[in-house]
Image (cartoon, helix red, strand yellow):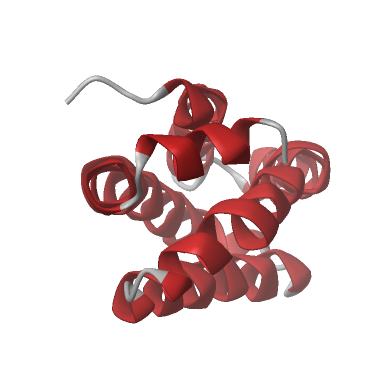
Length: 133
């Protein structure tokens, strides 16, 4: 399904998330100095890229989906956001592979389920209102 204009920005941000997940996965198999440096870079990228992305979803899209009755999808999204936040706060480079898999799976879920459902159940006017939010 073609992405609605109000969701394109969020969807395009997923590309950098996938790049970050790939970087974390690759570093997980490297020596500890590379793991530590990569973990630090992931923490910085999380704060500058992923956290703002999560906030836009949590303040814009998710409340509207909850109102539309998509409580399970909203709860899953919030749970995954919380899991990634906690993982990054652990400050443990041994978690690189776990972070990579969680982020990759989360992006896949949002693209295949969350955004598709939003386009299907929310009216065009509701989606259009999200663009300005």
